[in-house]
Length: 130
Image (tube, rainbow, N blue to C red; front, side, top):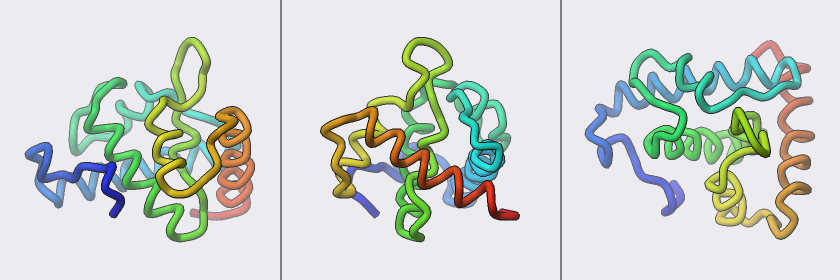
C-alpha cells in the first residue's frame, strides 16, 4: 500500500470493520459511477453503516484512498473521482489529487486529471453489472 495512507489500526478501527466500511463505500461509489454521476462526501458518509464518518473526516479520506489504490491496481482508475465537495468547486478534495500524483499520474492540470479519471471510471461501471 502507498505510504501516504494510514490504515484501520492507525485509527483504532478493527480491520474487519474497516473492510466492511470500505466495501460499503466502494459499492456506493460504483452505484453513482454506473449513473455517470458523482456523490458528495457527506452523502457517501451517510451510506457507510459499519463505521460512522462525517464529510470532512480524515479517516474517510484514507478509506477513499485505499479504495482508489485498489481500483487503480485493478486497472479501473481512481474510483474516488466520483466523490466531490457538495458546495463550491464540486470537485474532489486535495487528497484525491495528491494521491494521483503519488501514483505517478500527471496532476499538473488538476481539472484535466479529474476529467480524465471520470472518463476512465464512468464507462467501466456504466457498462458493468458490478
